[in-house]
Length: 345
Image 1 (cartoon, rainbow, N blue to C red):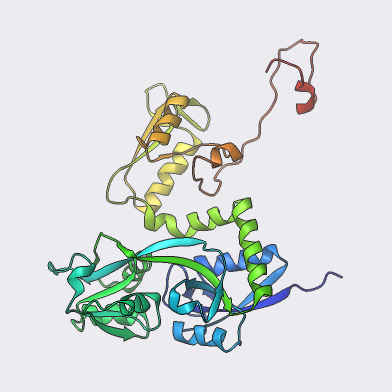
Image 2: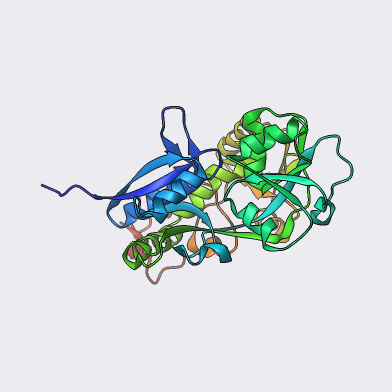
């Protein structure tokens, strides 16, 4: 019988979506959680997650009660405590203020202000690294920080932008807004982390990550967890396609876009609340438009390793199989791809 897979012990913090999420039933989820699950699966392992606040789960790792964390921003302060995998994502911080605030537009405007962060988060470490004249208020979670901001208990919150967008959506706090200008000094390289000196676990995680990057798993997870937060919902999205590729995308007798992938695209846009403009044309022109940014996406591009070097792909929505077409009555009757060798195709 096949041996049971080894289990890696990890931890998942609460209230850090879409990276780390803990459901009401205690189940760990999120981009970083699923990334670690897939990475260790590549190496024949499973992973079990303890859950709690960031302070709790980082304490578990520091005491050696777990082996790794799926989401740790690499900072100078943490180098003595952990060893880090290769970074799998780089993001920048942002400032959240009340909707009616007109005085805070950048990091310099926080001088003399009360600014809330999550206790022990790399946002707190970043603000304490230099004396910017900011009164820092450390809260148990970013949800608590947002509630304090909403109630007038502080002037702003410094947080990672995508986390802010997801938490504002989940908490329903309508009177807060994210300043649309990232804190470029606050760069965050997100990694897996292990206890200092645990080279065996670190090597396992790095190899699993490398395999995921190579086989497309990472890209699929990124699309799953971040697409809805990154798409430009504030404007119409231009989606291109082939005007003559039935039954997938083509123009009908009235010149209207139709076909299987056209309808899939429209259904996806409705589900996400997006305003799209579908434009079909000559395939080489459509592809060129995407390359130079005249359109935002192509709805039905077949994946290939060569195209993967130029474009980012969503998870597949349609599987196509190719056939060999040849003249009726021809003496040439190919039985497979190898029979095309030396032929004009």
